[in-house]
Image (cartoon, rainbow, N blue to C red; front, side, top):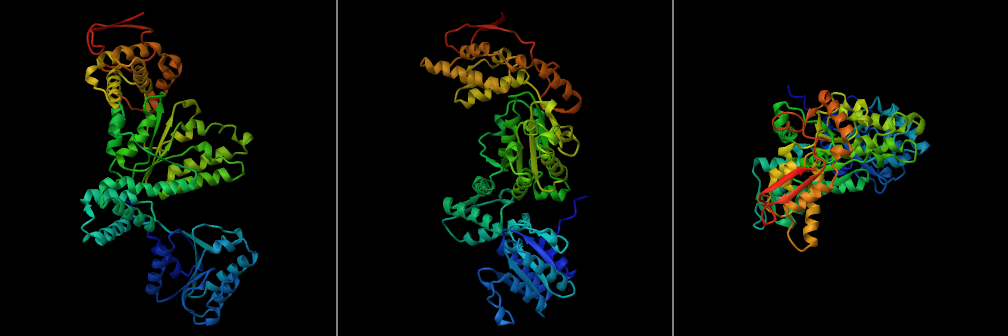
Amino acid sequence: MPDEKPKRTVDEIDLYIRARYPIIYLITWEEKRALDDLKDLAIKQGKTLHVWSASEGFITKLPDEANQKTKDPIAVLNYITASKETALFVLKDFHHYMNDPSAIRELRDVAEALRTSYKTLILLSPLIRLPIELEKDLTVVDYKLPDAAEMRKILDRMIKAVENNPRVKVNLDAESKERLVQSALGLTAVEAENAFSRVIVSKGRLSSEDIRDVLEEKRQIVRKSGLLEFYEVDEKFDHIGGLKPLKDWLLKRGKAFSEKARAYGLPEPRGALLVGVQGCGKSLTAKAVSSLWHLPLLKLDIGKLFAGIVGSSEENMRKAIQVAESLAPCILWLDEVEKGLSGLESSAVSDAGTASRVFGTFITWLQEKKTPVFVIATANDIDRLPPELMRKGRFDEIFFVDLPNSDERKEIFDIHIKGFGRDPSKFDLDKLGQLAIGFSGAEIKESVISAMYDGFAEGREFTLQDIANNINATVPISRTMSEQIKKLRSWAGVRARRANLPEPGGGLPEGDAGPTRYDFILGDGDGQKGETGATAG
């Protein structure tokens, strides 16, 4: 069964007003949109809407002209208490007065007076500052950002505005339109309008190809937060060599953020924990998924969240989560998560429990989050991973990323040789795959780069022999960390799903069983593919 459709913010406020809640604290940056909704709500309930700001006093006309332009917050609260009108009173940016003992006392008096009246006080602010004295008198409501239906209306309005303009081309079928709407979710109505307008003005068009430009608006939000990094993605999904089971799993979840998936009753995917050998594609996968799904990639460095002031670290984590949720649907990437969470066991002694509280905030959010934030966490060291992180419900799946098998090594060589502008068919990929037994994907890439340096230094094209020489000179991670890899494989055998296909013919990808030295001899004169041989020395 599909989940019950969440209430719109205006419906929630409507309920509170009819139930005579005296003071509503409405948190939003979208002042105009919120006021438009409150205006409609006042008309629906047959009430007058009065709006006040410290710069102008009451913007709307009052029956009592003497109080029209008052900018004194205490005088405003006194007027609201004494007013005989059936009305909604909206005070803008009243959080500035929440440290004033007189204002706090007056608000408590207002709350008492309004409980038996048909008046409601609404504090409209982008920030929440709630003195403990007012916790029982105020009801806090987060004004939700535009959902898909509202964002669709904004896009339709923009399309209608330019439909008769011969200089603007609109090329959006139903699927492209849905993708553009999804890319704009997480923006305020004004930010979305700005993003669509910028595309129209700069490119003279509106199409699914302009998703990257819409995401630029989200990048600005992340920059202003200072807690997350908006990661620029150049990697494509076909840049990942091997890992077919993991790629198939991700491909199936690519359309799960759409309205069609919600109508089907499908929940949004929660995330994946990628554990495995260093340099085997875990971080590359996080980047490539962002490109595949056309979703912004946010990188969270947990170490940056820790601050010197007690309580700041927990607040930083909450703010980082709020920013990620405001940009949903998006991908939140935690690279080498075990390093950021180190010291949890000694947290009570070393930092008065700060690390434990920050971690607790994070895993509680992982378990209970309702917003479409897909979390990809990568880890190399299982010994430093808190067991709570791997509990069912935190992630959809835990994958073990092993060293590439022989077919995957050939595919990785093909990707990197092609990526550097050369023709892979001129290289004996079968031989290269055999030579690089026990090599990670990163080590394979480095062998190609080093071969290019060798060729460039001598003023020629690099050859198969150059790659072989660099393979010979490298001690792969499978040898330097053979014990850790064996331990990882043993752990993953019963705790994780394999991200790699089995070695052709069965078994695990080769590790420390590979030769210790290759003597590689070319058999023809072209310096590339030809008669070759390799022996263990």
